[in-house]
Image (cartoon, rainbow, N blue to C red; front, side):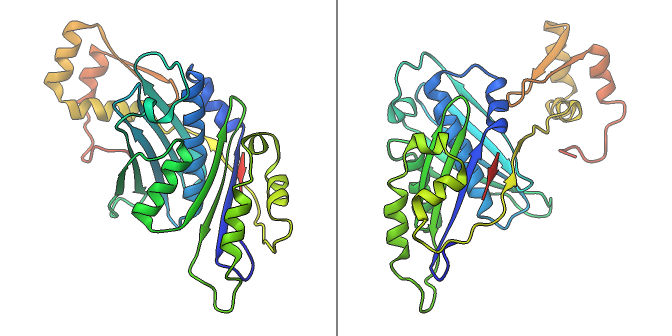
Length: 283
């Protein structure tokens, strides 16, 4: 937080949690970079919210990359996955995500609260451009982001302009934007968060809050897969089993495999619950 100024920020460095994402799929290099940057962006955004639940960021397109999706929670856990069709031969954001949209969903933990979703067309030449466009269009909040990712770390810096502080430093936002623009990708990927902040803002009066750990976590379970099969219906499940001895489901986020045979399927309807449903750091 910039003291006596209408500027706040977040900085994230995902090491072990990001490597856990990569350990579960063999992504092409360009896709890996985009997914890592989106993961860092989602983690930055949820840190700015007073919200108990999940934030889901998706990029959907008609290009080679069909889907990038990241889910982060207010408990500081994350998971991410991607789908693509064809060879990714070059690092071209617009071409890879042609005709794409950015979708942000807030899914509250309290079941009596409704989920909220915002959708905007993808704009710009990188994930940071797309995120800043979203914030301008949907949130009307002046936001700057710098994002980077490789096979070791996904990292990012976010600064936002707040309502003006009475008798505050009215030039602080312009200075913060100028300084953030000097941040290089390699610095985010090699320096610690404190080193980055010192390098950018050592001449500013900045209050740094305690770091919080971020971890990889996937909440898939056999019971959730069972609920999904119940939603398909008994006839549909029986039809699937006539063509195959088992129903095999693999979680796209963590790679966990679940298998149901005819005996397991019959058990699904013996005791149906009354309600079917879903029962490393940043500053």
